[in-house]
Amino acid sequence: MISALVYADETAVAYDDLASARRAVGTTWVHVAEATDDEIDAVVAAFDLHPLAIDDVRGDVRAKTEEYADHTFVLIKSASLTPGETTFEKEVRTTPIAIFIGRDWVVTMSTGAAKPVQRVMDAVERGDERLLHRGPDFTAYRVVDVVVDAYFDLLDDVETDIEEIEEEVTVSTDIETLEKINDVRRDLLSFRKQVWPAREAIGVLARGDPQQVQPQTEKYFRDVHDHLVQIVDLTETYRDLVSGARDIYLNTLSQSTNEVMKVLTVVATIFIPLTFVVGVYGMNFGESAYNMPELGWTYGYPATLLGMTLMVAVMLVHFRRRGYL
Image (cartoon, rainbow, N blue to C red; front, top):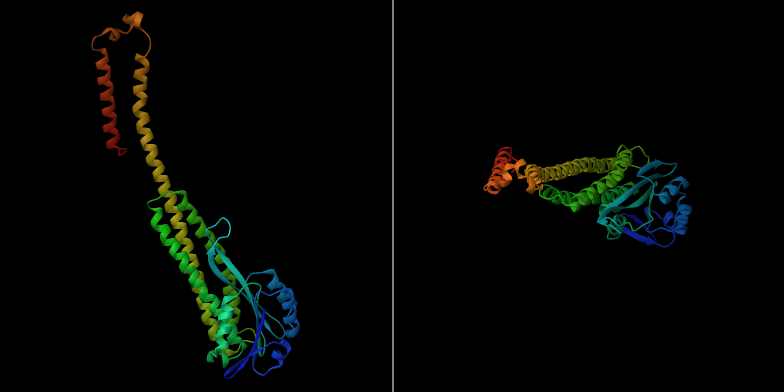
């Protein structure tokens, strides 16, 4: 769906015809949500957008900024942590948003539903003075700023998951805990692949390299760039926390295994000599008792039991002193 607005001073006017919107006085903003091939071709024809940039939009490449003869192309991706459609409980879902900045026009384009762009466009329609009184580069900044602000919301959700994991790893060795750790590690890795290129792309705008970015707008892009630097740092910190939680889980699992092995060692050590005694006296020497005199002794049986009991008691005292019990 194509939406076109032209705004100057205090008003924002909607247009149905792209050519008329392009010729109108003021800042022209055209937004294409869930763009089809026909809609993309129509916008390309109206604003003479570079074909390589359009290939990037359709190809869903990493975030980037490219300068062309009469416009600047910015590709950034919105990201959200949503329930997984298949195996995973949660997954990072991204939507590419293309921004074309011209001299007096801006085109935003997305192959999916771009809610951040719609929020800014709604603000223009309501007469937001911050947007109405500035040029297309400031509109592009507002779109990028809303997208980047949503990154913090995603990290807040990840932080909540990490706090739950940290509470579980010290008391639980369930396989579900390990699955949660791996899910968060995967989400952070996927998110990291989005924010690192985004930081580089916005850095180009923050330096004011494109001629379409006015000097007075550079400081706004620098602010967004600072937010992206902070987001990258948080992402790396959370990755370290998850790695630490994974190490704690593995150590707890190893410790639990060691405790089990201690018990098995104690049991095996106790029963080995008992099995030997039982094996010796379990042999059939009834007709040749003179070879084993104790078989004919009246107190042979209770003496054997007493000896085994003392043997077990000595071993238990030894294991207790060694900390096995």
